Length: 174
Ligand code: ADP
Ligand code: MG
Image (cartoon, rainbow, N blue to C red; front, side):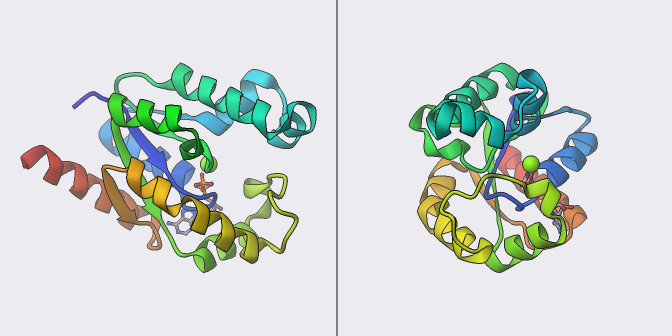
């Protein structure tokens, strides 16, 4: 199995954390579209949005996805990657898509514990938990429709990695 593995899900679901460990377990390279954007533009997400709007950010995000995608990689994606049909189709066609699913309260707790890692301009200007509930409600169907596998990401990173590995094994065996 060499086709890329894409991790999708809301901010805080563990795409970067689980992706890094998963890549290590599989002997793959790990790439992260958010990190790629930051290092290639030398700008934060907030900077890009202030300069080019969300539309400009989304265009750069699509570009980043296509640039980092390669055989033998685990690709962590930005939480909004599934918003564009072109991205959803690209990921489904090019590889295996895994949705790391966690309830809003868990996402909120994680982002509250480590706010610096989740720093993003607010999408709605509302309190964090309210915003997460709204964003999840709007995106849940897109995460599900894009994913080949939905994994419960509310457990420890090690347990989530094991669940992903089990899903990949089952898919290969079937
Ligand atoms: P994402 O890349 O999906 O936005 P991160 O991997 O950056 O999420 O995780 C966000 C925060 O939540 C980090 O502080 C990370 O340490 C923590 N975290 C991630 N996955 C888990 C997990 N399964 N259990 C507990 N904390 C987690
Ligand atoms: Mg991340």
